[in-house]
Image (cartoon, rainbow, N blue to C red; front, side, top):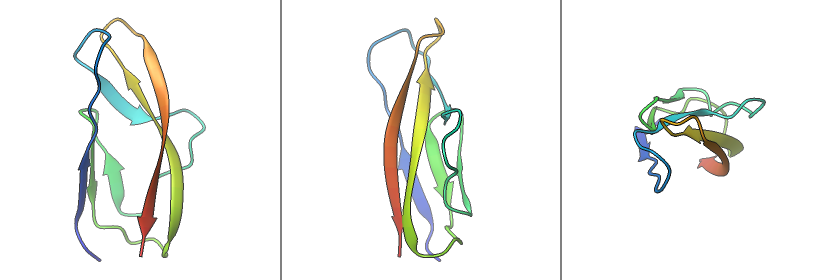
Length: 74
């Protein structure tokens, strides 16, 4: 029930970067969203669990990288 906020950052490539869930990635916990500028925000409403997902960062030249992350909801 608490507000959550996290900001992703990238280095290299050709800024600006665009962020999204990777194709075929499981979703974020219910109540959380990722914005194209790399912020995950919201109030998690899903059940307590460990949520694994992947985020794709794409640079302005179209190069991308998929990175795994985990959020634990208590």
